Image 1 (spheres, rainbow, N blue to C red):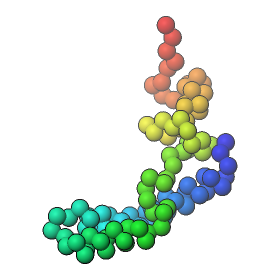
Image 2: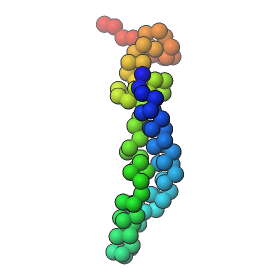
Image 3: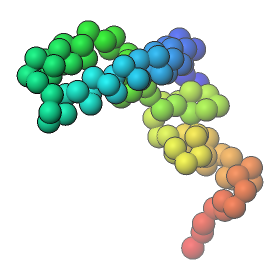
Image 4: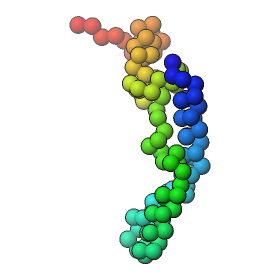
Length: 101
C-alpha cells in the first residue's frame, strides 16, 4: 500500500495536467511550426518554461488502481504485477489462467 500523500499528489498532478493541456499543446505547435517567426518561437519556449512543472504529462505516475503501488504496473489491467498474480490465482480475472508445464 502506497502512502496516501503520494496517491493524492499524483491525483493532483492529473488535474494540473488536464488544466494546462490545451495551452501546452498550442505552445508546442508554435515551437515546431516552420512558418513561425523566431520571436514567436522564443515566446513559445519561454511560455513553456513558465508553466508549472506538474503541467507536464510525464510527471504523472501510473499506479495500481487498488492500492497505489507505483512499480510493476500492467497498464492493460490497471493493476500491479503482485495484485495481478493474486487475482489470477483466485480466479478473479476472467480469461486468465496460470500456466504450468
